[in-house]
Image 1 (tube, rainbow, N blue to C red):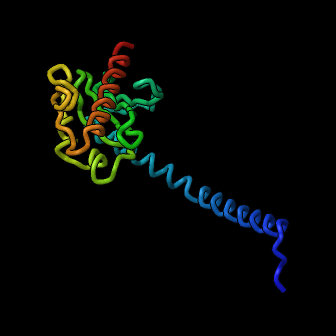
Image 2: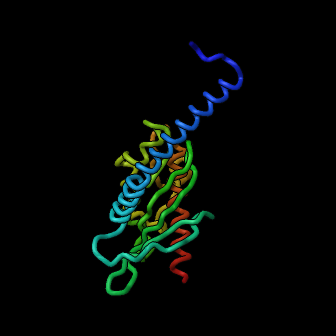
Length: 187
C-alpha cells in the first residue's frame, strides 16, 4: 500500500531528506576540518621557507595591514638583527583573490615569492603558481633599480601570456608587501 501523495507527506519527506543531507555534510566537515587546517599550515610553513634566505631564527606570526587588508608577517633574524621578512599579501586577480607570501631582505630587495592561494583561470592565470620564467623574475628584484609593473604598463616585468590581469595583480600584491615592509622598517 503506497502512501497518499499530499502536501503533508511531501513536506515530511522533504524535511527528512534535508535533515539527512545536513547530517552528512556536518559529518564530512568534522572529519575534514583538521586535515585541511594541517595542510594549510604546511603550505604556509613551506611558503615561508621558500621566500626567506636559509638560516636565521623565525619569529612568531605578527599582525599587519597589507593593502588595506588584515595580514601577517614573519621576521627572520640572524644574531638578533632582522635579516629578512616574509609578508603575506592578498589582492584581487582576474577570477578572485590572489594571496602571496613575499620575502623581502632587510635592504628592501625581494628575495622570492610564493603563491599561497589563487582562483585564477586554469591554464591561463593559474600559471602564476607554475610558470618558472614568470616566478623567477622576482628573485632578487630590486624596486630601487627596476619598476615593479608589467612591460605593457611601462615596467620591467614580463607578464604571463594571455594573463595580463593576473600578472598585474601579482605585481600589486608585491607592491603592497613592499609598502608594508616600509611600515615595519619604520617601527
